[in-house]
Amino acid sequence: MVSIPYDADHSKIPELQHRNFRNDDFWTEIPGWASISRGEFADHRWQTKNSIRKVDQVEKILGKRVSKDFIKDLKEGQHQTPMNIRITPYVFSLIDWDNPIEDPLRKQFLPTGSTFLPDHPMHLVDSLSEDDDSPVPMLTHRYPDKVLFLPTTICPVYCSYCTRSRIIGGSTETLEKETYGANQKKWDDVFEYLTRSPLVEDVVISGGDAYMLTPEQIKYIGENLLRIPHIRRIRLATKGIAVFPQKILTDDAWIKSVADLHKLGKAFGKQVMIHTHFSSPREITKWSQMAMERLFGLGITVRNQAVLQEGVNNHVDAMVKLTRQIGFINIQPYYVYLHDMVPGCEHLRTTLREGVELEKAVRGTTAGFNTPTFVCDLPGGGGKRHVASYEYYDEENGVSVWKAPYVKKEQTFLYFDPLHKLSPEAQKRWGNEGDRKAMIAEAKSRV
Ligand code: SF4
Image (cartoon, rainbow, N blue to C red; front, side, top):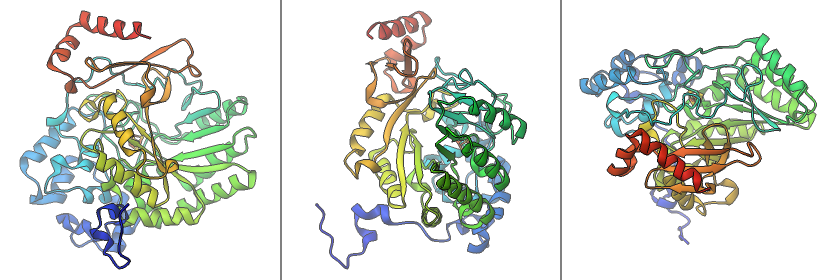
């Protein structure tokens, strides 16, 4: 047990680093924003208006802070990525522009061409088979009592690792997609389906991102759902708190709509919660803490779902700090997902073994209720399973076999480690179709 003197400087004590929150005017280090005041930076409209959408803007705003080679690498990335660029000034300014290649935030939002790897042969555009389990447009119904509702497919930022890259954020050179915004008629079809689905108790409102819904749309969706008698819980999913906390602090109309919905839920004896998406402790600053103070003051519970990513958080120190820091600002660490097997993400994926070892290392560092569950969301639609609950794991060839008895009783599911993390011999086997089929058949036969 560490003994800390009463008057010690907490910022210098390693065990208390998770209580330190960056609160300097960090954005003024970006040449294009050197004169932006704290008041302007806090304004959600300024953040939206100045979000970066193109590599040319990156070049313009950074001037000589980055090399021409780096900009060229970013441009090359745009020919390979399934996700368009969209990044708020807040996150953009938190990137270490003296070493952008290694920066965990840059890796998540601004892909470089030199880091892409060929997709795994077993990758899928809709890795979780959400479209297969969709009874009406915009809705996935897989678990008996829970549904996933996607009322929009636009977000305040676009993440390179997005599991719904097939629909989110508009087409890119490598992926054609049908991105959609608000559509009340289609939402009404969802409410109608849910009204006649009495088993459903839980609705995740995701997308896309609830930040992109107007206050009126939040009210419309939320009230329609809360008025369905058997629906007991709704969860608004937004990465916003992690990447755009200024909206929580200065968009009073939006926050009021969420608070009103929360109040209505309470009056009905139902839960209205927020699920957010911090993946790196580098995303957490005093702004995040202030945003959470506002939400906590309104009595709104916030949970976090992180995605395990190479060079972002697949390290014990980063994962422990992320867990303890979000816990400190009253966000409950809920899940850490193994990266889904979607296109354009092979360089960001980790092995199942890394997930298992990280979960072992993180467990015990803080209270159990504040410790995330590490899960694999099974390709093919088996749902989320604890990382250590696989039936069989061929680590040499990176093949794991899973079951999801309650979700799809007869089916087995497969998850594959990224090829670049396997031995040269195993990589060679994956290059041969016959060997590939044999490896998969052998792994399945063990279950
Ligand atoms: S915020 Fe969520 S839905 Fe939007 S791009 Fe990121 S991961 Fe995808």
